[in-house]
Image (cartoon, rainbow over all chains, first blue to last red):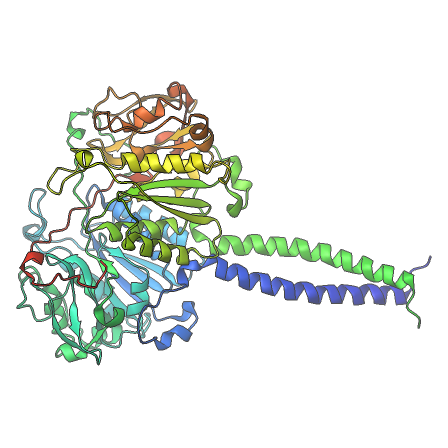
Length: 320
Length: 320
């Protein structure tokens, strides 16, 4: 049998038809596999009023700038590892990690290199590594109780400075959140803060001597007071983990900073009074501040008393 | 022109050829999109000897059965939330959570419902919720130091019983790992344990009074001893977080359990001596036990001293 031009036409016709069918089939599969791969994006909004942002594709969400002060200690890498595992689920974030140090440490540099490798191809997760040493007279000593001196103050300020110095390169719709490395974050928290217009706020679990310290909110979704018992004279008696700020306010008020000069517990109020005039400007989140999506967990200092009995440290040449 | 049988043969021929080409093309695309969607799966194998499992699609990996005892306390939901955030990155796991309780609590039921919603469409993440109450004489009291009594013993046994009772429905290639709810896990740990043949082991950070407690391994990748200083007379001086067991050994030895009758620190050795005959059967992981991929972190009991000053608890109608 001779293969004629007519035969070839039919070959092409058949091929084109199958291509069409397969393309349609593939499109269906890809859509399915997408929802299969990103399960953490479902069921994440618990607000009573849905945010207008829910219609944006996740990679176009306003960036959340996470300012995380960190300092060298036995459990540092562990803390950052589990925080990193949480943040890898969150779209459109820029994690600014500020070490209490004169120089970037190998441990943090290695950690961030790995975190970036894990977030590779998620172009909307970025990282910045800064350092700022706390002067010796303000440093917590090994046997000081952890509340004696303020911690992370100058590091958070360094993060604020970085945002202002890079005002031309950052997301002008961005949100700033002070995310300490030992807290615990529910993924829905990041959805809640994402549409902050000025300053948003919400409950924090296990802080201020309470199961939950929180703003009290009326039916019109306005903050009308606080349930705080610890230093209730604070102007804004909430924890560092309990609020987020729109980047516009940070840029508009270039001298707004934290300070080493206020007593413990007053950092949040000190910053916020430079940004807003009163509680009427606060935006309550988490279903009128009735849901706990962040906990002020603290990690025990590990017992290392066997370490002194060793001639060579157990972690010689091993990063812990 | 008449369409003959010959024409149809050519249509089929062309279609089959294009199908072959497209299938190959699709396979390449799926592989690419796969690595794109799961950034946490890159750079994950730090072993010197690559596992034969790396060629399996991730959803066909042997199941890791995670046995996690948990008990009611202020920080319980926080702990499980951050552990859950980590586990959501891991493919092919079955999380068996066993409450120290007579009845399933609302808190854990709610938590697991949410975890399952997040892992929905990951058919390879499963959950089982069990309960087992520790008898009153073995329970840690509120002001007891946390090391006074063994904890999680009967709950872990309940997990082992469940596996044996469900032997016909579980993955016969599975691995069993005792994953406490307060430890910190690097995602690579799960890749390391995945091809355990009998019992695998690796270093654990921040345990036994050391920065790292670990098996000592020779050039042939055999365990030849331990660096433990805390109770070095233990037969297998490693932490609960420092080993995993192939399911076959659990099923072959149906009477192998933990016990309330051994002193603190001896649970691991008590179980392992029922499963293997000596250290020659151990399989060292994590690059000859030189990498720390799990930390025995402990969370501080939160200070709740303001709570007593309140007429109504701060968390009335609020789950913390």
